[in-house]
Length: 159
Image (cartoon, rainbow, N blue to C red; front, side):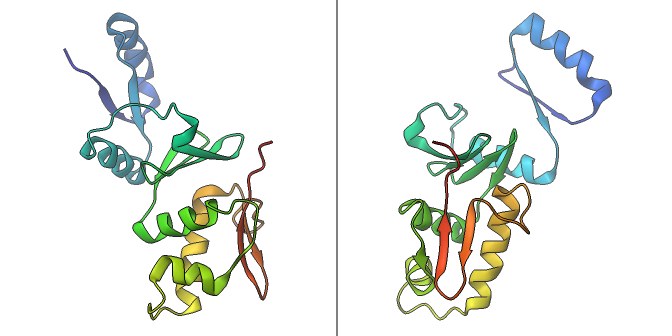
């Protein structure tokens, strides 16, 4: 008997999945894109198939947006987005001072090191990529805020 079923998202498979789930108790996993597949592979390679259950393992940024710092993932609206090592370092640094603006150079030092030779353009690219993963509208961010001339702030909209 299998421990899990993995299917590409295709609605004509849904009745079959419901039947398998009823009979076996196995919950199907729907893969919606290559990114979701890579996130699942990351979890399987880590040998960790347990769901995120402890609030200490994640930070809730919005009602349906979580930063899973243990697994280096963003969960948003039922989808999983893996973080690159640089994206993870940025999120980790900003989440350690949640709700407080972080100066740009302090963030660069935390991510690339004091002697890291990285331009502001690199940071801007990673901030944009993170916004695409955590924001509903990356052009109008509510969670990862730019403080022009100062730095960045990661906010939680959950009280």
